[in-house]
Length: 284
Image 1: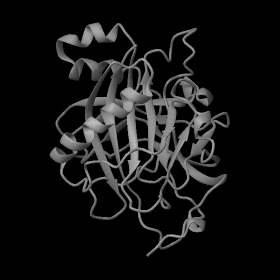
Image 2: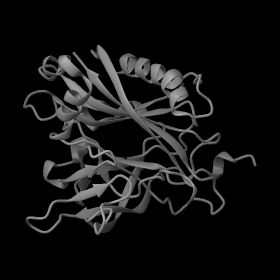
Image 3: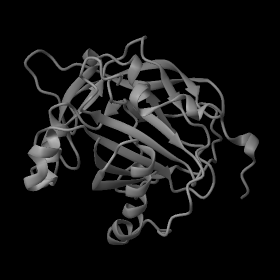
């Protein structure tokens, strides 16, 4: 079936995003990546749905930057050597080098990139990971240096003295532009630290990182990029060590994001498929 460009939802839209209520005093927020411990819920936060207006960045991509918004749109990316996105080893060998080059080319002053993992999401019942329909940030000021120490070995302490960031590179794997479950993201400049709820992120291997759930605030400014295509990449900055320093010019350096249900989406629209690659970026 050929997708008509007119069928792709575009322009501003009001939709429901799933925020979270903070846990009761003295209770720690938790999220199990896969199966929870016996007797534990997978996630113990209470969902707080809110109607939010999203701004479409299509046609205004250059207005947004990592330093101000913690997201950046990149267009006209050459075709990848990886085409199937089914085999992790193949993805690491073929796609990771392309992502590393993209980051070095588009983040001024960056000198070193270390890619530590990726996640593929597919909107079908058999998929291991589906689009995440609640607002969140993938890292926190606690988990970011933990990531550096975990992956960078004897270089870690030296690297932690300079600027370091954690950036997700998001792209669609659909042949046609995305219609269903597009990604929403809030400008870091509109996001207050108190809106972030630390969540212990527990992996099957016993490793515990930390992510952040998001409390709703009317001050937050949410966006999306309509009809993302295979030659487009979205950089989502989860942490910037300059983001908490006065005078740095960085407006927070962390971007809340979520998949969302666009009420204008056709009922028979193809389910969204995507890959996000997570990287440590060092320098300048």
